[in-house]
Amino acid sequence: MSSAVPMEISEREPLKRLYEEFPTIQDDVSAFEGVKTQLSTEKFFFQELHEQFDKQAGQTSDLKAKLPAYYAAKAARLEKYFEELKDIYLDVETKEKFLKTVQKESHLLLDQSDLDRQEKKNAARGKSLNNAELVFSEVKSEIRDICANSIQDHEQTMRDVNALSNLVVETKEKEQKIADLTNPEKNEVKMDLEKSQRILDEQTQEFQDVYSSIEEKKINVNDLKWKIETLQQEVAQLQEQRQEAEKKVLAISSKAQNQDPRVEKLCKWYRYANNGYRELAGVESVEMASEAELVVRFKIPRFSNPALHIFIDPSTQTIEDASVVNWDGDITDIIDFAKKFDNLPFLIAQVRARILESSS
Image (cartoon, rainbow, N blue to C red; front, side, top):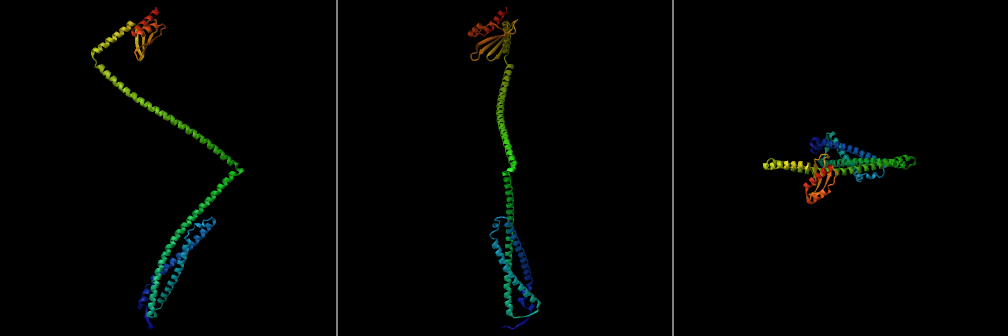
């Protein structure tokens, strides 16, 4: 066994390093105490949250089953961490007391073997302290996750409780309304409902009538629209026909301006002959009332404008029938002879002669 040798603290290198590292160890201890305080606070929060949830769950049915299944396992794991941290804390606290003792005493009688042993213990405790720091970090992260999940579960539970409370209130209100409707003393409500239903049926019928009327008007509007489109097409066709007629008139007018002087002379001669014939035959005017009717007006004194209406067959262009207006005589024989020989001048001359004979 080696002899005890008095040594100054400054001369003992391993103990000196431990002494120099003492502030760091103090910081670790302070950090551990802060974590321990935080753990205690969060544990108290868990207890309060659990009590509040139990209180809410006791007011409603089967709400306690909504607590996450892993909550109990997390709580047990936290308890285990608390026990491990407590042991580490006691170990660190013992180490702190030892360092304080070394700091107070200026000289110590220690063997080299004791110093070696103490160095090994210090190394082991430093490793344990590092492990404790890792455990602190894991526990802190675990606690944060559990806090977040627990707060979310608590908020969801409160929402479920409020929704269930509102559902209970609405159910009671509906039950009260049903009770009021079935209560004979409150038949007025039932009568009001029947009256409202009757008014609603009447309004529905009115709306259906209005809808039917609107549909009929739509049909009429569509018909009118079709007629308008048809008329527009006819107007377009008439405009085209008018344009063609105007073109023909312009062409005829152009030809008339450039016609042969001999044709103009023949036209004048025809007009003079026609006028002379009408004077000799006593005819005032000749008009085409239609494609199948010719009107000859006579100029005879003592008679009020007698007129001979001659009807022409459009297909054969022959005399079909005749009649006299403003004169009551009979011309059947003249008509038959004119029809037989298809002689229009004979018909006109003989009718005028018969009218003159009746006036003498």
